[in-house]
Each structure stands twice: as structure tokens, then as C-alpha cells.
Length: 285
Ligand SMILES: Cc1cc2nc3c(=O)[nH]c(=O)nc-3n(C[C@H](O)[C@H](O)[C@H](O)COP(=O)(O)O)c2cc1C
Image 1 (cartoon, rainbow, N blue to C red):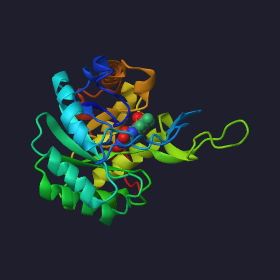
Image 2 (image 1 turned 90 degrees about the vertical axis):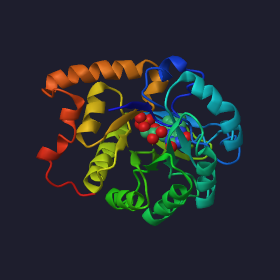
Image 3 (image 1 turned 135 degrees about the vertical axis):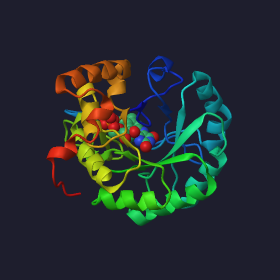
């Protein structure tokens, strides 16, 4: 099992200490053009997690490749580049430009971008177009909103994905004391502890649909949480919102994971893989 960060939840260049604890660093989503992101307020805290409407703020792919990527390379981590876009063509163009760039261990296609239709056929179309132009390992990152995660997973797998990342945020709204939306754009992506059961269900459904590697994420805070993702079929686990509160979370989660293995009687993480399938006979997608 590799421990990664979730896209957008860690800036390795300003927090290299945290990045060094990870087995790979996942970048914030890169789009073709630079994006300032949405106007503030872009972050709202809720009882059990946070809402963000950052709006894919990033320097754009030209500057990312010319300026950011060389600096990330110096950190020595395998780099996973998260790629976003507003059309299939935009995703494929960025993949083509990244193809062959040193240090890029994988490309994670953020298939939950604004204006991107998340239907299985559209997700598969994007994956297929990127597959045509890159030899990089391609992970398809899916939203938990899909009605049938298994169908989406089978579609992107058939289109040539090498792995699946699950889950992105859920859409949510928070209201202030005057009952007005806290976020300037009203709705944002909901992340944090409350997402975990939703994410576990998605990973479980995905594991029933494919043997490809799965990066599980959504509300992971502790070693126990990470092990639960492994039990539901995750190959790797990513830390997101927890990193804002605890920059040492990767080392802590690893230590807790060892304790949790001892407590649950599994000899290794591999041993606990898919443990949730023994007892749960039939979970519908
Ligand atoms: C502030 C913030 C920014 C994010 N930016 C991105 C992004 O650029 N691309 C992406 O694929 N996911 C992005 N995400 C979603 C996370 O990668 C992750 O899928 C989600 O937060 C669930 O994990 P968590 O509950 O552990 O945070 C972002 C999440 C947060 C909280």
C-alpha cells in the first residue's frame, strides 16, 4: 500500500516535510490555461468536514511543466499529475504534453471538473483519448455522485485506465448565521470525515467491478480509516482534508496502521486486503 496525498490538499513546495512522508505526491489539478479560481469565500468549515469551491486555481499547464514540475522533481517523490479540463480534447492535449516528462509516475484524470459530464460514456471517452496519446500510467478519478460506480469503473477500465481513484468531493452547501450561503458560489465540494462511509461504499463497489489498482480516499484521518479502505479493496490510500489540520498525518497514520493491524489480528496490510468481502455478501452499487 502506498500512502499519497489527495489532489489539492497539499502543496509539496511549501510543505516539503509532509511531502517527504508520502510514497508519492499528487499535484493540484492542472488545466490548460492558468486559473485564478473562484472569488472568495471559497472555504467553509462544517460540523464534520469542510466545503471548498477553490475552482481549480492553478498556473496552467505551460507554467506547470516549465516551472513547477522541475521544482517538484527536486523533492525526489514520484509525482502524480492531476489533469483537468473542460473538453475531452483539453485532457488529451495536457496528457500529450506531459508524456515523457521526467519524474511523472502517473497521471490522475480529474473527471469531476466543472462542465465535464460525469456519465460513464463521457468519462470513458476522456480516458480513451488520453490513452491514445500517453504511455503514462492513467488513473481515472471518479466522483461519488455516480449512481452506479461499478458501471463507471468498468467503462474507464475498458477505455484503458490503469487504475481508479475514488472519491472526489460530494456537492454541499453551508449557511451562515443569517441563513445565507457561506460560499460565494453557494455550493462547494464537501470533504472530511463524513465522506468516509460514502467513499468506502464506492471503493467496495469499484473493487467488485475491477482488478485494477484503486486509490481510496475520503475522510481518512487515522490508521484505522486507512485499513478500512484496504479492507474494502483499496490498493493505495490518499490523505486529503486531514493534512490541513495535521501536517504530520502521513507518519501518524502509518504508525496507527501498524497498531491497528496488531489489534485486528492481520499480519500485514496485504493480509487485510478485501477483508470486508468475506462477510458482506451483497452491497448494491
Ligand atoms: C481544498 C481542496 C482542494 C481540492 N482540490 C482538488 C483538485 O484540484 N483536484 C481533485 O481531483 N480533487 C481535489 N480535491 C478533492 C480531494 O482530492 C479528495 O478527493 C477529497 O477531498 C476527499 O478526500 P478527503 O475527505 O480526505 O479530503 C480537493 C479537496 C479540497 C478539500
